[in-house]
Structures are given as structure tokens and as C-alpha cells.
Amino acid sequence: MSHQNVLLLRLAGPLQSWGLTSRFGRRDTHSRPTKSGVIGLCAAALGLHREEPLGELAEVLFGVRADRPGTPLRDYHTVGGGKYPLRPRDLLTDHQRADKTTQHSAAEDMQVGPFGRSELAAWYGSPKYVTTDSTTGALISGEIRRNALITERWYLADATFLVGLEHPNRTLLNQIAHAVEHPKRLLWLGRKACPPSGDIALSIVPGTLREAFETHALLPETPSYENPPPAPTTKARPWAWFESPHPLPGIGPLSDQPVRFSADGGIHSLRWETRHRITIASHARGWDIIL
Image (cartoon, rainbow, N blue to C red; front, side, top):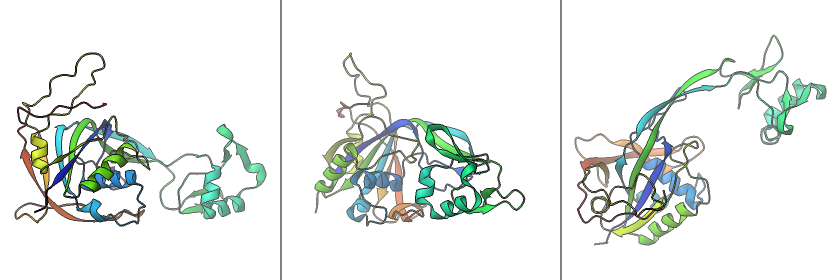
């Protein structure tokens, strides 16, 4: 029987957002990190390409302990409408946009905007599906209306989670731990607007997810720069979720098991997990980390 090891990760920041059923008009967040989101973070740290097979990375058993669940936060957000600057990058990377710009605007119509960027007087921003207004001849979006759209975006504010990745291959866990502290790509907590703070990779310990969560104190809330670090908190009984390697009867599955990441949203399959209250042992290990 192979011995299991658990890599402990600290996911904390001003904002987090772990979507499960997000649509354009409403971007939700799960109450805790999703496996797809965490594996995506690890894949980015390792420098994997979107179409690259995940291999053993997707086979780890996933667990999360909610040391501080955070507060749901709703963001009022608008998209589209108005005039937008035409950047050189738009012409270099989007040949269709470049063709439409040269067809419908003369050189004298171009105005130099701030920071040296050019702006079309009648340009309406749209990432794709650009068409011509039959009345004015201006370039407009052909998919959404010209007026701004209102979207609803949800975040978790001031949350801290202890995430565990369980696998018998300790070398794999060491590679992940090194990568998240020396990432090859930018990391975020679910969305690009949510960067992580402080240390992410904490330690690799032998045992199962439950054993790891029970023998480690709650993550500290505030840094201690001059005074000794506070005594570890062990009396609280946080909720924790553990992935099951097999389907569980009577328990609904989650669709956040990553199969492949891609620009069009990727492919996910089902996985099962159980929820438990964790009693942290009195001899639990404390933390010496950068917050």
C-alpha cells in the first residue's frame, strides 16, 4: 500500500471568486475554492499550456478547510457602451479589426489620444462581431446593444482557506510547491482581479487530508512584525470538504473536476466530496509564514 502525502496551500487575499455556474450577466462565486480553480492555479504556476494534458496534476485528491469563510461581496459592473481608444495592439493582433478600420476611416480621422494611443472619433468598443451602423457609418458591435450592459459579479472578501492536495507521489507535490512560490505565469484566486497574498505553499506532510487538517492550527489572521507570533488557535471547529475517490450514494456531485483547460472554457467532469467539522488537535502545529 502506497503512503499518502499532502501538500498544504494557503489561499488568502482581499478578494476571491470561485465560479461554478457563471454566465455573462451574473458571475457567481462558490463558498470555497473549487478543484478546477486550484488545479488551474497550479497549472499556471508550472507553466503548462492550456491544451496540455494535466496528467497526475488532475489525479490529486482535493480538500479545503474554511479557516475564515469570508463575506460575500456583490460588485455592480458595467460592460460596453461609449467610445474606446483604438490601441496599436488591436491592429496588430486582430486583422479583421485592422481591415475595418482602414476601410472606414481616413488618416485625417485618426486622433492621437493619451499615452500616444490613436482614437477613432466614431469608434465604439467591441472585441468581436464588429459591423457598420447603417445610418452613421460608424463601427459598432454587431452582437450587443450600444448601451452599456449591467452585470453582477460576486466575490468573497477577506477569506482564508487551507487547501490540501493528497497524492502518493511526493516528487509531484514538491514540484507544485516550488512552482506556486516561483510561478511561470501570474496566479490569481479564481479571477484575474483577485491576486493571492503572502505565502501559498506551506508544507508537505505524510498522511491523509483529514489528518493534515486536524494536526494544523488555524491560519493566522494578522501578521506579527515586532511581537512574538500569537498562540495557534485550536479550539475552533471549521468546516472542511474532502474529495472522495469514488462516487458516494445520496450525495450530489460537483462538476469541477478538470479534464482539459482551453480558451473556450475547457472540459470538466464530476467528482464527489463530503463535509465535516474538523476538531483541531491540542498539539496542532502553528505557522511561521508571511501574510
